[in-house]
Image (cartoon, rainbow, N blue to C red; front, side, top):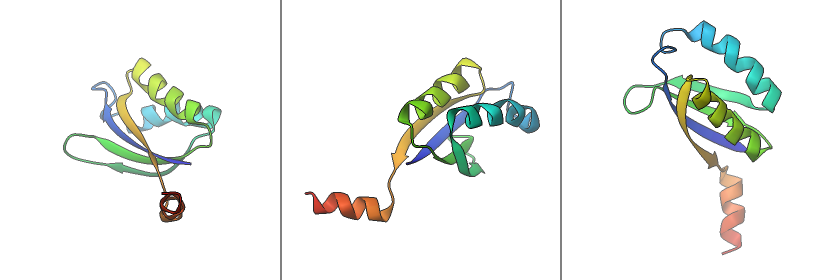
Length: 92
């Protein structure tokens, strides 16, 4: 399953990309989350991540962990492929 994270970085981490990834990468691996795309953005959010993970609780745990560590505050939503959407429409 794919998920989209919209995030705002904590002020202590905004310019420390390498340090942030040294901490984040092992946690992602531990939780079984794979980042498929990462974009830094301007406006309401500092970054957008597209991730793949089979465990929704792991996705929730990652959000909680990032907030607890002060790395980022996130909003997360599931993302569905066109095929998933088409299959759901057939059930309506």
